[in-house]
Length: 143
Image: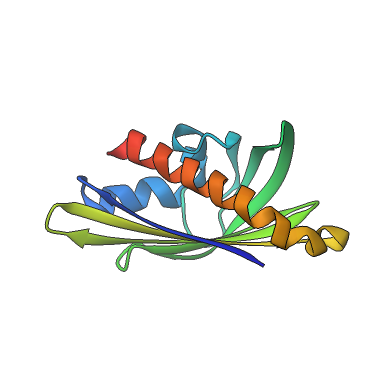
Protein backbone atom coordinates (compact mmCIF):
# COMPACT_ATOMS: atom_id res chain seq x y z
CA UNK A 1 0.00 0.00 0.00
CA UNK A 2 1.12 3.53 -0.78
CA UNK A 3 -0.01 6.21 1.69
CA UNK A 4 0.09 9.95 1.09
CA UNK A 5 -0.74 12.36 3.89
CA UNK A 6 -0.79 16.13 3.57
CA UNK A 7 -2.03 18.98 5.73
CA UNK A 8 -2.94 22.27 4.07
CA UNK A 9 -3.83 25.47 5.95
CA UNK A 10 -6.35 27.73 4.19
CA UNK A 11 -7.87 31.12 4.93
CA UNK A 12 -11.39 29.95 4.23
CA UNK A 13 -14.44 28.87 6.18
CA UNK A 14 -14.01 25.23 7.25
CA UNK A 15 -17.58 24.17 6.38
CA UNK A 16 -17.27 25.73 2.92
CA UNK A 17 -13.92 23.99 2.32
CA UNK A 18 -15.32 20.64 3.43
CA UNK A 19 -18.40 20.94 1.21
CA UNK A 20 -16.19 21.75 -1.79
CA UNK A 21 -13.70 18.93 -1.22
CA UNK A 22 -16.19 16.19 -0.30
CA UNK A 23 -17.97 16.71 -3.63
CA UNK A 24 -15.66 14.90 -6.05
CA UNK A 25 -17.23 16.73 -9.02
CA UNK A 26 -14.87 19.53 -7.94
CA UNK A 27 -11.66 17.48 -8.30
CA UNK A 28 -10.71 18.86 -11.75
CA UNK A 29 -10.98 22.40 -10.35
CA UNK A 30 -7.98 21.88 -8.07
CA UNK A 31 -6.20 18.57 -8.77
CA UNK A 32 -4.07 18.81 -11.94
CA UNK A 33 -3.98 14.98 -12.09
CA UNK A 34 -7.74 14.76 -12.69
CA UNK A 35 -9.08 15.36 -16.20
CA UNK A 36 -12.78 14.76 -15.56
CA UNK A 37 -15.26 14.03 -12.77
CA UNK A 38 -18.99 13.58 -12.88
CA UNK A 39 -21.58 12.30 -10.45
CA UNK A 40 -23.21 8.99 -11.37
CA UNK A 41 -25.54 8.54 -8.38
CA UNK A 42 -26.93 10.84 -5.72
CA UNK A 43 -27.87 14.47 -6.10
CA UNK A 44 -25.10 15.87 -3.92
CA UNK A 45 -22.12 14.79 -1.88
CA UNK A 46 -23.03 12.29 0.80
CA UNK A 47 -22.97 8.62 1.67
CA UNK A 48 -23.83 6.59 -1.39
CA UNK A 49 -22.84 9.25 -3.91
CA UNK A 50 -20.89 7.72 -6.82
CA UNK A 51 -18.55 9.52 -9.17
CA UNK A 52 -16.79 8.67 -12.40
CA UNK A 53 -13.30 10.18 -12.21
CA UNK A 54 -10.74 10.17 -15.01
CA UNK A 55 -7.19 10.66 -13.77
CA UNK A 56 -4.15 11.23 -15.94
CA UNK A 57 -1.20 9.05 -15.04
CA UNK A 58 2.02 8.79 -17.04
CA UNK A 59 0.26 10.24 -20.08
CA UNK A 60 -2.66 7.82 -19.88
CA UNK A 61 -6.29 8.39 -18.95
CA UNK A 62 -7.21 6.18 -16.01
CA UNK A 63 -10.96 5.87 -15.31
CA UNK A 64 -12.07 5.13 -11.76
CA UNK A 65 -15.38 4.92 -9.97
CA UNK A 66 -15.52 6.48 -6.51
CA UNK A 67 -18.23 6.08 -3.90
CA UNK A 68 -18.69 8.06 -0.73
CA UNK A 69 -18.39 5.62 2.17
CA UNK A 70 -18.51 8.24 4.94
CA UNK A 71 -19.74 11.82 4.96
CA UNK A 72 -20.13 13.70 8.24
CA UNK A 73 -20.71 17.40 7.59
CA UNK A 74 -20.81 18.21 11.31
CA UNK A 75 -17.38 16.63 11.92
CA UNK A 76 -16.25 17.78 8.44
CA UNK A 77 -14.93 14.29 7.64
CA UNK A 78 -15.41 12.14 4.55
CA UNK A 79 -14.06 8.95 3.07
CA UNK A 80 -14.31 8.07 -0.60
CA UNK A 81 -13.25 4.75 -2.09
CA UNK A 82 -12.21 4.49 -5.72
CA UNK A 83 -11.89 1.41 -7.91
CA UNK A 84 -10.04 1.24 -11.18
CA UNK A 85 -8.62 -1.52 -13.34
CA UNK A 86 -5.16 -1.25 -11.77
CA UNK A 87 -5.73 0.11 -8.27
CA UNK A 88 -8.01 0.82 -5.36
CA UNK A 89 -7.81 4.24 -3.69
CA UNK A 90 -9.21 5.37 -0.35
CA UNK A 91 -9.28 9.11 0.25
CA UNK A 92 -9.94 10.49 3.73
CA UNK A 93 -10.68 14.18 4.08
CA UNK A 94 -10.85 16.01 7.39
CA UNK A 95 -11.28 19.76 7.67
CA UNK A 96 -10.89 21.48 11.00
CA UNK A 97 -11.55 25.07 11.94
CA UNK A 98 -8.52 27.15 12.89
CA UNK A 99 -8.05 30.73 14.09
CA UNK A 100 -7.03 31.71 10.55
CA UNK A 101 -9.67 29.69 8.69
CA UNK A 102 -9.37 25.97 8.02
CA UNK A 103 -6.86 23.16 7.93
CA UNK A 104 -7.34 20.29 5.48
CA UNK A 105 -5.89 16.89 6.26
CA UNK A 106 -5.90 14.61 3.25
CA UNK A 107 -4.89 10.98 3.50
CA UNK A 108 -4.90 8.77 0.41
CA UNK A 109 -4.12 5.06 0.37
CA UNK A 110 -3.41 3.33 -2.94
CA UNK A 111 -3.34 -0.43 -3.37
CA UNK A 112 -2.14 -1.69 -6.71
CA UNK A 113 -3.87 -4.72 -8.22
CA UNK A 114 -2.38 -7.85 -9.73
CA UNK A 115 1.29 -7.91 -10.62
CA UNK A 116 1.50 -4.12 -10.14
CA UNK A 117 1.36 -4.61 -6.37
CA UNK A 118 4.98 -5.79 -6.55
CA UNK A 119 5.93 -2.43 -8.06
CA UNK A 120 4.42 -0.38 -5.20
CA UNK A 121 7.79 0.38 -3.53
CA UNK A 122 9.08 1.78 -6.81
CA UNK A 123 5.91 3.80 -7.39
CA UNK A 124 5.80 5.52 -3.98
CA UNK A 125 7.91 8.53 -5.05
CA UNK A 126 5.71 9.06 -8.11
CA UNK A 127 2.51 8.95 -6.07
CA UNK A 128 4.04 11.34 -3.51
CA UNK A 129 4.84 13.84 -6.30
CA UNK A 130 1.30 13.54 -7.64
CA UNK A 131 -0.06 14.13 -4.13
CA UNK A 132 2.16 17.19 -3.68
CA UNK A 133 0.93 18.61 -7.00
CA UNK A 134 -2.67 18.02 -5.95
CA UNK A 135 -2.16 19.82 -2.64
CA UNK A 136 -0.41 22.70 -4.43
CA UNK A 137 -3.48 22.91 -6.69
CA UNK A 138 -5.70 22.94 -3.62
CA UNK A 139 -3.69 25.84 -2.15
CA UNK A 140 -3.98 27.75 -5.46
CA UNK A 141 -7.71 27.13 -5.83
CA UNK A 142 -8.82 27.75 -2.26
CA UNK A 143 -5.91 29.65 -0.77
